[in-house]
Length: 71
Image 1 (tube, rainbow, N blue to C red):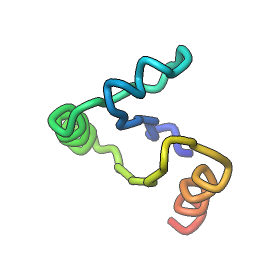
Image 2 (cartoon, one colour):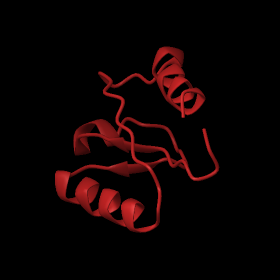
Image 3 (cartoon, helix red, strand yellow):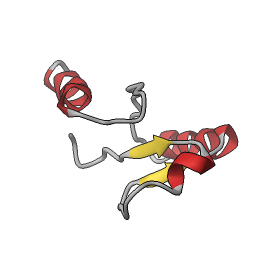
């Protein structure tokens, strides 16, 4: 990922209680996601979306890596 990349997760409040400590910002409402995305765009960052079913794995990470290889 580039130095401008940020990791963010969007999870339900119930699922958040089960997560281990992390530096990844968890966005638990659509409003928070939209606010975060708007700020990222204003800061000149690119925003990508990789949908998951709750378990981020190497296949998901490779999508971000592939995107940066093709730019």
